[in-house]
Image (cartoon, rainbow, N blue to C red; front, side, top):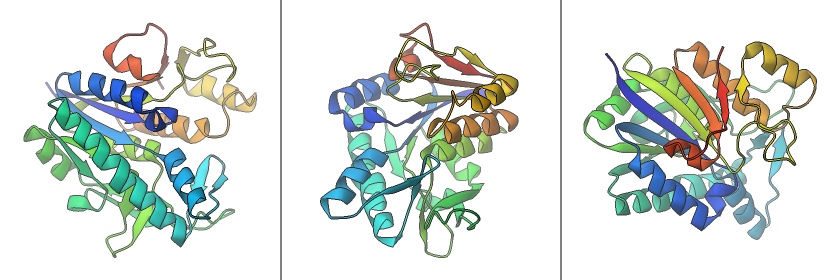
Length: 259
């Protein structure tokens, strides 16, 4: 019988809202058993970039990362946000350890191959070091991963945090019964982005294709859902998308995904 592992990815406006983030981290710390947190922070990175005269660029819901913006996202993701989150979790008696993919060679990636779009220093994951992550978990540490990976040749890479969560979840399925939860400010995947109550409660691969065709699922939600189905195809037991309250069962409606 495999031990349960809960992997939570937090992003969106929750990261920028100190009150919402504090509430989320309090709930995350209370999750029983083994757990991993993966965080984004794109909006905070964009704010800092603008302050120093850089203009963030997005294509198909993903950030285009030139050398200057790579420095910014590394400072924000692996530094400011990661350490603030770890410090707060320690306050709530959750023994967290902040990590980028370079730390302990935990996530190796390569610079995305240029096809139609040059995403710059964007990283696509090649390998998750499941043995080192498993070792941390078995020693009662809670890994907190930011959205920075490396290529084993000294180059840091900006990698979509949803992808990191999906890859870590997939990489640990041989060791644990993995539940993956994506949390952001919305209540789930919505039929109408202007109506927070229009939750699509169940999505499978067939209905996902139809929702894409109708442009109901678009923009930044596309890579999130692609990562969800990737994880399901690689042995992740359950995937949930919802607002932060979903991690402690405070809400009844959210989006559940299956193949």
